[in-house]
Image (cartoon, rainbow, N blue to C red; front, top):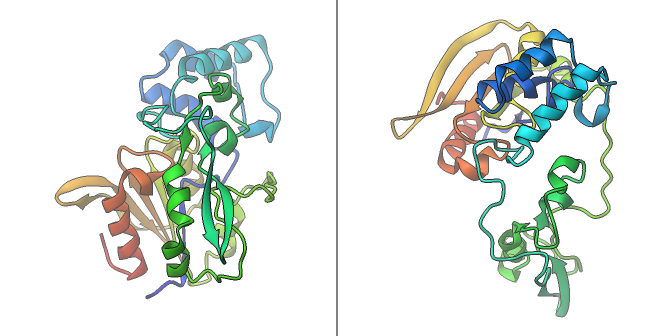
Length: 277
């Protein structure tokens, strides 16, 4: 397989456009806020950024516009604006969080899934709606990954006396002012194939912002914007630039591979093998 390349899905790339800066236009165009709120935000030259990576506007008008947007969208799924904010699940915080598996002949416990507030502790406006019955997401994935057959299929050594959990409890994340835009400039003439795909209902890293930083790269278009299909249905749109393919995935958000499994599988397979899709 031709795996000499990179692929990023809904990745934070340029804080001038990604997340908060592109959120007002996104939620307005999705008919989630009225035009008067967007006009108040734009007319007062308001600015807000993810986790205040840059200073936000604090005039009374800006604070009012931001508060109104937060209030109107706080009960939506920030990562997928048209999907249910609380998925169907059978496991809650009030129930057992831990499963048990045998590793090298020893019974070991593992944490089952993660809650939204555990996975995204920075989303304070979401956390305020949560309680001890907050649903746990991905518990079935934790159970599957800790099965002995699964560990064997992944060639995990039997001597590794550790269980699998969805998120690391020891990994510390660091927020960079430069985000990840720099890598696109570094690899521009490297010959390494690059793809950036975007689930187009994401509110966290909206497609609107991704299109803006891609335009900022100022690369030549080698294949004009066109739809791509799965079984005759439009699955999104694609535009190809010098050494970069930009792909949208229609009707899904930040976790596009989870909610558009067949289209994204086809897209990834085609990209790996250098085929059009």
